Amino acid sequence: MNDTAWEILFARHNILEEIAKVGMFRITADQIKVEREPRLMTKFDHRVNLPSIFKDNDLAILPVTRGDYIISKFSAYHDFERSALECQRVNLPLGIQSLLPQYIVSEAIALNCANACGILEDFLEDENLVPTVSGRMSSGEFSFNISTDGKQQAVDVRNSQIEIDAAYEGRSCLALFEAKRDISNDFLVRQLYYPFRAWCGRVTKKIKPVFLVFSNGVFYLYQYEFTDPENYNSLSLVKQKNYILSPEITLADIQTIVENTPICSEAEVAFPQADSMKRIVNLMEMLSERDMTKQDITNRYIFRERQTNYYTTAGHYLGFIEKGERHSDGFVYFSLSDVGHRVMKMPYRERQIAIATAILRHRAFNETLKIHLQCGEMPNINMIVQIMQNCGVYNVGSPETFKRRASTIRGWIEWILGLIEGE
Image (cartoon, rainbow, N blue to C red; front, side, top):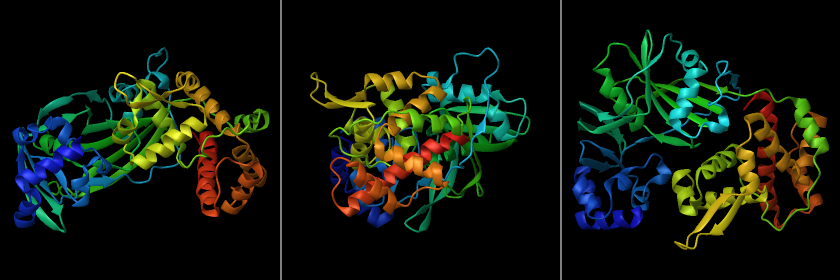
């Protein structure tokens, strides 16, 4: 719906022509509202969420007041740096039962849990942290430069609305948090930059912009700084750490699963092409909240439509995700299976073991891991292809397809082994 509405608005207001002439186009909420609710038409937290006409012309949109936006060839997004492999284990305070991983169903609860476990104090290297400002508020007035089609463009912000997921003030800093529960490749810098600029002029302590991602029992924290406060694109990573709240999973646990899991017969389900098990589990977390259409998943989970097909099929292959039809609206919906629901309600350690068991029921994965444990290293792609061919995997034909599917086996086996380190 956004694609069509923006196509109409671009044609009606000659937006591309105006950008070509003056470098930007200013559009009001009232103009947008003629086609669709502005809140839905302007919230693009990741590049993949942008409407086609924006992607095709390298455009982005930024708010500058409570009712005005500017469209230009902004460099508005930042790719997440690769996260550390290791996780630091943390514990809840004695007697706390409501902050276990299976009960963390929102960003706010994830932040509360991180604070209760001492994660924030450790990561920020500050003491006596107190939760302070949060929610929607005014940005105040400030100006900045942003990279636009290779040049610097000045932008003035006048009382735009900002939203802060949480702020924690300690002895030496004020940390402003943006929190998410979905794993993505990038984020909109504005989510950190506008709150940073708003509060720079209000406190004398150092401002620390922090992005927190919580998924499957792991807290991924990224602390950034703006080396030039007046430059939107001066974002630089200061530190990145991961924390995990769970009992330890040992090599002996993994070996027991490999040796004792009965091998299943391969069903006539497409062999998966979805390398990241972390993303499959994250998708299961999303589906544990509600059923979702393909478009819901594509938009919410920062996928392209083809990736949505790959990852829902992978979940179906493991027996965790089902596809059905909701007759009231006619759309096809994805949901967790009964097994998927049971797994997502398990405590963290039991959940990981259940997922690893579901993977290792399939002979190609089981045999690949056995070789890895025996030899101390991952079999190469050609050896994995040979294992797949010997196992008679379903509907994989060409050599290139075998190699692509072999990367899934490698990715899932690495995820299982990573459980030992808590990744």
